[in-house]
Length: 442
Image 1 (tube, rainbow, N blue to C red):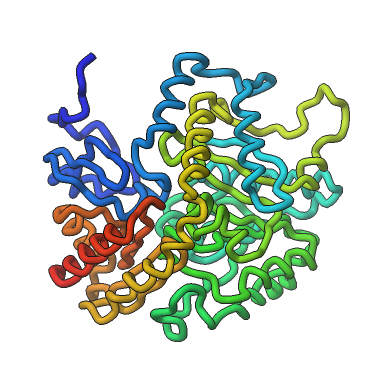
Image 2: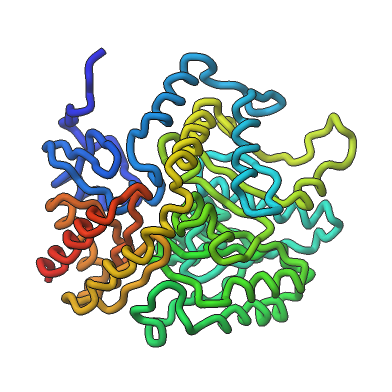
């Protein structure tokens, strides 16, 4: 069989690329052809240091042996099994393994294929739960400004990123939004959780008073808002949300698609902050980004509320053709094995102080107006070019790639989230790349 990894297609027009400036890219393509551990290989043979874990997902690094072997072995034995009214052993093993590392009380797992699907699944579970509990009037969903919950209609409805919403009509009805927690005037250059802003959570009480608790099914937030620029919750903020939701019988959903599986130095952000929601959405790190997969965790109380009525009847009319796909399940088991053997779910806690100091060493570099960090996540916010928002950060992204580092930008913010296998020396190398680029761009 021919090896196609280094063959560049001579026509790029057919592929409509996602979340990409297609015309710009196709004039000067940035092609990856291989990857190993902390590095990609570009089509011109250069090694590219991965400062973003792919797209927040390759937590264990690239092409790890246990994951590769698990996929190869499973593909040769059972490639696909029907997801409805049928099962296969490894998906049940995977669910048990996930529950073992989940926050206490998260006892059941519903499998999806992406973070977007996990969010829509969680929203549907929340709405259906309220109905089976005899509270069918609870149909409202509350999200947050600057929240990112994937790109399906449910996710963009509760999400709060304008560009992801404005083209697509009225979206779901009955959705409201809490204010975001970004307070640069008070919290600029904070290390870890900001001191100011916990009281913003009280805005949820105002929304409850506006609509009445009897109409609200769930609140969904990212514990750390990643894709909108690494917005870190102020100290005490998440606990206040938990208390308000508990008081009013509202389900609290944590979107941990980014923060799950070791990103903060704990298995989940719920562990890091000591706040347990009713539902947790995950994807990305569950399979190391190798094969699409997502997992929604729910409490026993939520799961058991559906287990009523005649036993031959379907309890929850929802699911996907590829829920718990055998090869994706094998990839996830290989991922969990790698995490366990290398201590990766907690390694971020050991590196976090070094990471923090390295990031904040960029204070004072040209156009840097804020730096934020938590666990192994970082953000460097840049002063926008007047009249040309996003251009400065995008220039940094392109120049960093040219010089051998992959960073991510959102708006005029550089976001960093390296694989959890990164060394201190590689942290220094990554930050040096960023420093160099900041001094090159206008």
